[in-house]
Length: 192
Image (cartoon, rainbow, N blue to C red; front, side, top):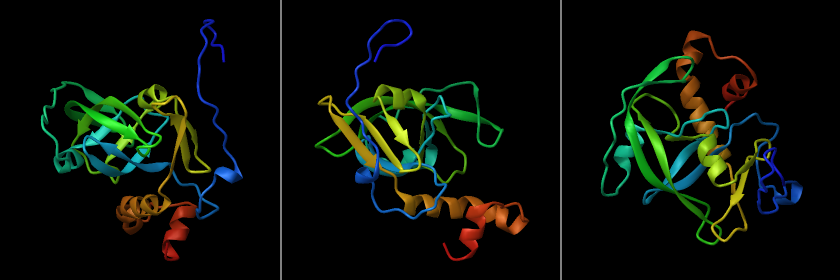
């Protein structure tokens, strides 16, 4: 593939389709939620957010990780997001991140903004990290494919069950106030 600047970009062949699928409830409008190894721990509830330029990690999740050197570099700026609010970051921290299992993994160091706000996700991965691993997402298939360390294609399937749990936790305050709308609210009230 050639970019507008004339540089050639190489990526492994990535194919999405029925043969690549895994069991999931359909129809759905679920976000892509995965699990990855962060530092030395497997972390669940990682939201893939192609609309975000930042990688975000919650303070609560950071405290649960077991690794040396929990040095957070203080930052003195507000981060836009989280429903239009601005969020004061606690700082930035660099952590190792591993996409995939050992056979088809991609390991990189990632800078995370650390925030101390209530959210149902432990980590939000933005475009910068996705670009570094040459990731392609298929939201409908709840799948992400990326270039592994051996230059071959690796893939991760979304965790739809964890996503459903996150969604229920996130709308709980809205249900009582009558603000929850849309098809997910109807599915939730039917026992999902």
